[in-house]
Image 1: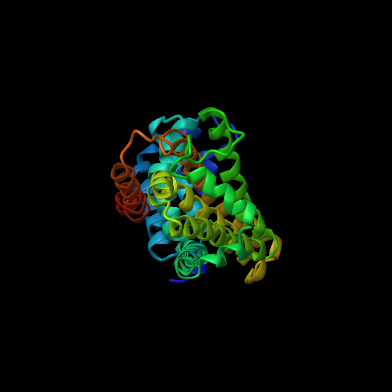
Image 2 (image 1 turned 30 degrees about the horizontal axis):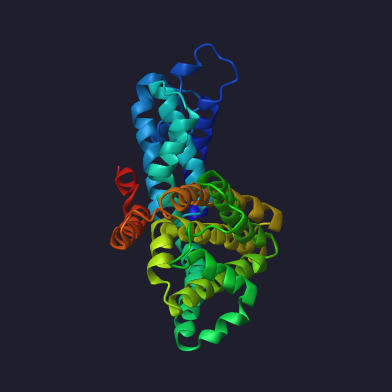
Length: 337
Protein backbone atom coordinates (compact mmCIF):
# COMPACT_ATOMS: atom_id res chain seq x y z
CA UNK A 1 0.00 0.00 0.00
CA UNK A 2 1.32 3.45 -0.89
CA UNK A 3 1.91 5.93 1.90
CA UNK A 4 -0.77 8.34 0.64
CA UNK A 5 -3.36 5.54 0.61
CA UNK A 6 -2.33 4.47 4.09
CA UNK A 7 -2.71 8.05 5.37
CA UNK A 8 -6.14 8.47 3.76
CA UNK A 9 -7.34 5.18 5.24
CA UNK A 10 -6.17 5.87 8.79
CA UNK A 11 -6.16 9.66 9.08
CA UNK A 12 -9.63 10.04 10.59
CA UNK A 13 -8.72 7.81 13.53
CA UNK A 14 -5.40 9.62 14.05
CA UNK A 15 -7.27 12.94 14.11
CA UNK A 16 -9.66 11.47 16.68
CA UNK A 17 -6.64 10.52 18.80
CA UNK A 18 -5.40 14.11 18.47
CA UNK A 19 -8.78 15.43 19.67
CA UNK A 20 -8.73 13.06 22.64
CA UNK A 21 -5.14 13.87 23.56
CA UNK A 22 -5.75 17.63 23.21
CA UNK A 23 -9.40 18.13 24.16
CA UNK A 24 -11.23 21.46 24.27
CA UNK A 25 -12.01 21.34 28.00
CA UNK A 26 -14.72 18.71 28.29
CA UNK A 27 -15.12 17.33 31.83
CA UNK A 28 -15.54 13.79 30.58
CA UNK A 29 -12.72 13.96 28.03
CA UNK A 30 -10.56 11.33 29.78
CA UNK A 31 -13.16 8.65 29.10
CA UNK A 32 -13.60 9.27 25.40
CA UNK A 33 -11.79 7.98 22.37
CA UNK A 34 -12.42 7.53 18.68
CA UNK A 35 -14.62 4.94 17.08
CA UNK A 36 -13.05 1.56 16.23
CA UNK A 37 -12.04 1.09 12.60
CA UNK A 38 -15.33 -0.65 11.79
CA UNK A 39 -17.34 2.39 12.97
CA UNK A 40 -14.85 5.14 12.21
CA UNK A 41 -17.39 7.14 10.20
CA UNK A 42 -19.84 7.49 13.07
CA UNK A 43 -19.99 10.83 14.85
CA UNK A 44 -20.16 9.50 18.42
CA UNK A 45 -17.13 8.73 20.55
CA UNK A 46 -16.96 5.61 22.65
CA UNK A 47 -16.13 5.18 26.29
CA UNK A 48 -12.86 4.09 27.86
CA UNK A 49 -13.78 0.46 27.14
CA UNK A 50 -12.52 0.92 23.57
CA UNK A 51 -9.13 2.32 24.59
CA UNK A 52 -7.21 -1.01 24.52
CA UNK A 53 -8.28 -1.95 20.97
CA UNK A 54 -7.84 1.60 19.70
CA UNK A 55 -4.37 1.84 21.22
CA UNK A 56 -3.38 -1.52 19.69
CA UNK A 57 -4.44 -0.21 16.26
CA UNK A 58 -2.37 2.93 16.75
CA UNK A 59 0.68 0.84 17.68
CA UNK A 60 0.03 -1.37 14.66
CA UNK A 61 -0.06 1.72 12.41
CA UNK A 62 3.34 2.76 13.74
CA UNK A 63 4.75 -0.74 13.16
CA UNK A 64 3.42 -0.81 9.59
CA UNK A 65 4.85 2.63 8.83
CA UNK A 66 8.29 1.48 9.98
CA UNK A 67 8.18 -1.89 8.21
CA UNK A 68 7.05 -0.30 4.92
CA UNK A 69 9.76 2.41 5.18
CA UNK A 70 7.28 5.27 4.99
CA UNK A 71 8.60 8.82 5.42
CA UNK A 72 10.40 9.75 8.63
CA UNK A 73 7.88 12.57 9.22
CA UNK A 74 4.98 10.07 9.30
CA UNK A 75 6.89 7.58 11.47
CA UNK A 76 7.85 10.26 14.00
CA UNK A 77 4.29 11.68 14.08
CA UNK A 78 2.85 8.23 14.82
CA UNK A 79 5.58 7.55 17.38
CA UNK A 80 4.68 10.81 19.18
CA UNK A 81 0.98 9.85 19.21
CA UNK A 82 1.74 6.39 20.62
CA UNK A 83 3.96 7.88 23.32
CA UNK A 84 1.43 10.57 24.25
CA UNK A 85 -1.43 8.03 24.33
CA UNK A 86 0.58 5.65 26.50
CA UNK A 87 1.40 8.42 28.95
CA UNK A 88 -2.20 9.63 29.03
CA UNK A 89 -3.67 6.17 29.50
CA UNK A 90 -1.18 4.93 32.06
CA UNK A 91 -0.67 8.23 33.83
CA UNK A 92 3.03 8.50 32.92
CA UNK A 93 4.73 11.85 33.33
CA UNK A 94 7.17 12.80 30.67
CA UNK A 95 10.39 13.85 32.34
CA UNK A 96 13.30 15.27 30.42
CA UNK A 97 15.78 12.75 31.83
CA UNK A 98 13.47 9.87 31.00
CA UNK A 99 12.92 11.22 27.50
CA UNK A 100 16.67 11.45 26.89
CA UNK A 101 17.23 7.93 28.20
CA UNK A 102 14.48 6.61 25.93
CA UNK A 103 15.96 8.46 22.96
CA UNK A 104 19.46 7.13 23.57
CA UNK A 105 18.33 3.58 24.35
CA UNK A 106 15.78 3.23 21.57
CA UNK A 107 15.15 6.28 19.39
CA UNK A 108 18.68 7.09 18.25
CA UNK A 109 19.68 3.63 16.95
CA UNK A 110 16.35 3.27 15.15
CA UNK A 111 16.77 6.73 13.63
CA UNK A 112 20.28 5.84 12.44
CA UNK A 113 18.93 2.72 10.73
CA UNK A 114 16.08 4.68 9.16
CA UNK A 115 18.56 7.24 7.79
CA UNK A 116 21.17 4.66 6.81
CA UNK A 117 21.68 5.99 3.27
CA UNK A 118 22.82 9.35 4.64
CA UNK A 119 24.82 7.67 7.41
CA UNK A 120 26.60 5.40 4.94
CA UNK A 121 27.25 8.29 2.55
CA UNK A 122 28.76 10.40 5.34
CA UNK A 123 30.83 7.44 6.58
CA UNK A 124 32.22 6.82 3.09
CA UNK A 125 33.03 10.50 2.55
CA UNK A 126 34.86 10.61 5.88
CA UNK A 127 36.60 7.25 6.29
CA UNK A 128 37.71 6.64 2.69
CA UNK A 129 39.86 9.82 2.47
CA UNK A 130 41.10 9.19 6.02
CA UNK A 131 42.27 5.64 5.32
CA UNK A 132 43.70 6.41 1.87
CA UNK A 133 45.69 9.36 3.23
CA UNK A 134 46.96 7.32 6.19
CA UNK A 135 48.12 4.53 3.85
CA UNK A 136 49.69 6.82 1.22
CA UNK A 137 51.83 8.61 3.80
CA UNK A 138 53.51 5.34 4.72
CA UNK A 139 54.74 5.18 1.13
CA UNK A 140 55.27 8.91 0.47
CA UNK A 141 56.00 10.64 3.83
CA UNK A 142 56.56 14.12 2.37
CA UNK A 143 52.97 14.13 1.15
CA UNK A 144 51.88 15.24 4.61
CA UNK A 145 52.99 18.77 3.75
CA UNK A 146 50.29 19.03 1.11
CA UNK A 147 47.77 18.96 3.97
CA UNK A 148 49.68 20.13 7.05
CA UNK A 149 52.10 23.03 7.30
CA UNK A 150 55.58 22.24 8.66
CA UNK A 151 54.62 24.07 11.85
CA UNK A 152 51.45 21.99 12.32
CA UNK A 153 53.34 18.75 11.68
CA UNK A 154 56.03 19.76 14.19
CA UNK A 155 53.36 20.65 16.77
CA UNK A 156 51.77 17.20 16.46
CA UNK A 157 55.17 15.56 16.72
CA UNK A 158 55.81 17.44 19.95
CA UNK A 159 52.42 16.50 21.43
CA UNK A 160 52.85 12.78 20.78
CA UNK A 161 56.58 12.33 21.11
CA UNK A 162 57.68 9.45 23.40
CA UNK A 163 59.47 12.09 25.50
CA UNK A 164 56.39 14.34 25.82
CA UNK A 165 55.56 15.15 29.43
CA UNK A 166 51.80 15.15 28.78
CA UNK A 167 50.49 13.31 25.74
CA UNK A 168 48.13 15.16 23.46
CA UNK A 169 48.51 18.54 25.17
CA UNK A 170 49.68 21.69 23.43
CA UNK A 171 52.12 23.87 25.35
CA UNK A 172 49.52 26.30 26.65
CA UNK A 173 47.37 23.66 28.40
CA UNK A 174 48.24 23.18 32.05
CA UNK A 175 45.66 20.74 33.41
CA UNK A 176 43.00 18.18 32.55
CA UNK A 177 40.11 20.62 33.02
CA UNK A 178 41.60 22.98 30.45
CA UNK A 179 42.03 20.11 28.02
CA UNK A 180 38.45 18.92 28.61
CA UNK A 181 37.15 22.36 27.64
CA UNK A 182 39.47 22.42 24.64
CA UNK A 183 38.37 19.00 23.39
CA UNK A 184 34.67 19.85 23.80
CA UNK A 185 35.08 23.12 21.89
CA UNK A 186 37.19 21.47 19.17
CA UNK A 187 34.82 18.53 18.65
CA UNK A 188 31.69 20.69 18.72
CA UNK A 189 33.23 23.01 16.11
CA UNK A 190 33.88 20.11 13.73
CA UNK A 191 30.40 18.65 14.25
CA UNK A 192 28.74 22.02 13.72
CA UNK A 193 30.67 22.64 10.50
CA UNK A 194 29.64 19.25 9.12
CA UNK A 195 26.00 19.88 10.05
CA UNK A 196 25.57 23.57 9.22
CA UNK A 197 27.24 23.15 5.82
CA UNK A 198 24.13 21.28 4.71
CA UNK A 199 22.22 24.54 4.31
CA UNK A 200 24.35 25.31 1.22
CA UNK A 201 22.57 22.52 -0.68
CA UNK A 202 24.79 19.97 1.08
CA UNK A 203 28.03 21.29 -0.45
CA UNK A 204 29.36 22.61 2.86
CA UNK A 205 28.76 19.27 4.54
CA UNK A 206 30.49 17.43 1.70
CA UNK A 207 33.50 19.71 2.01
CA UNK A 208 33.87 19.52 5.79
CA UNK A 209 33.33 15.75 5.98
CA UNK A 210 36.03 15.08 3.37
CA UNK A 211 38.32 17.81 4.74
CA UNK A 212 38.26 16.43 8.27
CA UNK A 213 38.84 12.92 6.96
CA UNK A 214 41.91 14.14 5.08
CA UNK A 215 43.27 16.12 8.05
CA UNK A 216 42.83 13.28 10.53
CA UNK A 217 44.30 10.83 8.04
CA UNK A 218 47.29 13.12 7.45
CA UNK A 219 47.97 13.48 11.17
CA UNK A 220 47.59 9.76 11.86
CA UNK A 221 49.61 8.79 8.80
CA UNK A 222 52.47 11.16 9.60
CA UNK A 223 52.79 10.13 13.25
CA UNK A 224 52.57 6.46 12.32
CA UNK A 225 55.25 6.84 9.66
CA UNK A 226 57.73 8.44 12.07
CA UNK A 227 57.19 5.65 14.60
CA UNK A 228 54.96 7.24 17.25
CA UNK A 229 52.79 4.12 17.37
CA UNK A 230 52.33 3.65 21.09
CA UNK A 231 52.06 7.31 22.01
CA UNK A 232 49.67 8.32 19.21
CA UNK A 233 47.52 5.21 18.75
CA UNK A 234 47.49 4.54 22.47
CA UNK A 235 46.20 8.07 22.98
CA UNK A 236 43.47 8.11 20.31
CA UNK A 237 42.23 4.52 20.62
CA UNK A 238 39.93 5.09 23.59
CA UNK A 239 37.98 8.07 22.27
CA UNK A 240 38.18 7.36 18.52
CA UNK A 241 34.83 5.54 18.28
CA UNK A 242 32.52 8.18 19.83
CA UNK A 243 34.44 11.09 18.30
CA UNK A 244 34.54 9.77 14.73
CA UNK A 245 31.01 8.38 14.77
CA UNK A 246 29.86 11.76 16.10
CA UNK A 247 31.43 13.42 13.05
CA UNK A 248 29.66 10.94 10.76
CA UNK A 249 26.26 11.58 12.41
CA UNK A 250 26.76 15.35 12.14
CA UNK A 251 27.75 15.01 8.50
CA UNK A 252 24.72 12.79 7.81
CA UNK A 253 22.47 15.41 9.39
CA UNK A 254 23.97 18.04 7.08
CA UNK A 255 23.54 15.80 4.04
CA UNK A 256 19.91 15.23 5.05
CA UNK A 257 19.34 18.99 5.03
CA UNK A 258 21.15 19.41 1.72
CA UNK A 259 19.23 16.59 0.03
CA UNK A 260 15.91 18.16 1.02
CA UNK A 261 16.96 21.38 -0.69
CA UNK A 262 18.33 19.68 -3.83
CA UNK A 263 15.50 17.16 -4.24
CA UNK A 264 12.38 18.38 -2.39
CA UNK A 265 10.10 16.14 -4.46
CA UNK A 266 6.55 17.42 -4.64
CA UNK A 267 6.98 19.58 -1.56
CA UNK A 268 7.98 23.21 -1.50
CA UNK A 269 11.65 23.58 -0.59
CA UNK A 270 10.75 25.27 2.69
CA UNK A 271 8.41 22.43 3.67
CA UNK A 272 10.97 19.81 2.67
CA UNK A 273 13.60 21.67 4.69
CA UNK A 274 11.36 21.75 7.77
CA UNK A 275 10.67 18.01 7.54
CA UNK A 276 14.37 17.22 7.04
CA UNK A 277 15.36 19.49 9.92
CA UNK A 278 13.21 17.48 12.35
CA UNK A 279 15.21 14.37 11.50
CA UNK A 280 18.59 16.12 11.20
CA UNK A 281 18.35 17.75 14.62
CA UNK A 282 17.68 14.38 16.23
CA UNK A 283 20.81 12.99 14.55
CA UNK A 284 22.69 16.00 15.88
CA UNK A 285 21.48 15.20 19.42
CA UNK A 286 23.09 11.78 19.07
CA UNK A 287 26.28 13.33 17.70
CA UNK A 288 26.38 15.72 20.67
CA UNK A 289 26.11 12.86 23.16
CA UNK A 290 28.96 11.01 21.46
CA UNK A 291 31.08 14.15 21.16
CA UNK A 292 30.82 15.02 24.83
CA UNK A 293 31.58 11.47 25.92
CA UNK A 294 34.62 11.44 23.60
CA UNK A 295 35.90 14.67 25.15
CA UNK A 296 35.76 13.20 28.66
CA UNK A 297 37.61 10.06 27.56
CA UNK A 298 40.17 12.13 25.68
CA UNK A 299 40.86 14.37 28.68
CA UNK A 300 40.80 11.80 31.49
CA UNK A 301 41.65 8.37 30.03
CA UNK A 302 43.68 8.85 26.87
CA UNK A 303 46.68 10.74 28.37
CA UNK A 304 47.10 8.29 31.26
CA UNK A 305 50.56 6.77 30.81
CA UNK A 306 50.05 4.34 33.68
CA UNK A 307 47.75 2.30 31.42
CA UNK A 308 49.56 -0.24 29.19
CA UNK A 309 49.35 0.26 25.43
CA UNK A 310 47.56 -3.08 24.94
CA UNK A 311 44.89 -2.08 27.47
CA UNK A 312 44.21 1.20 25.68
CA UNK A 313 44.02 -0.49 22.28
CA UNK A 314 41.77 -3.24 23.66
CA UNK A 315 39.45 -0.71 25.28
CA UNK A 316 39.27 1.26 22.04
CA UNK A 317 38.40 -1.82 19.98
CA UNK A 318 35.81 -2.87 22.56
CA UNK A 319 34.15 0.55 22.40
CA UNK A 320 33.99 0.37 18.59
CA UNK A 321 32.32 -3.03 18.81
CA UNK A 322 29.85 -1.86 21.46
CA UNK A 323 28.85 1.28 19.53
CA UNK A 324 28.45 -0.53 16.20
CA UNK A 325 26.36 -3.25 17.89
CA UNK A 326 24.29 -0.54 19.60
CA UNK A 327 23.42 1.15 16.31
CA UNK A 328 22.72 -2.17 14.57
CA UNK A 329 20.68 -3.97 17.24
CA UNK A 330 19.36 -1.53 19.88
CA UNK A 331 15.65 -0.74 19.72
CA UNK A 332 14.71 -3.73 17.58
CA UNK A 333 12.86 -5.50 20.40
CA UNK A 334 10.76 -2.40 21.03
CA UNK A 335 10.12 -2.14 17.30
CA UNK A 336 9.01 -5.76 17.06
CA UNK A 337 6.66 -5.32 20.03
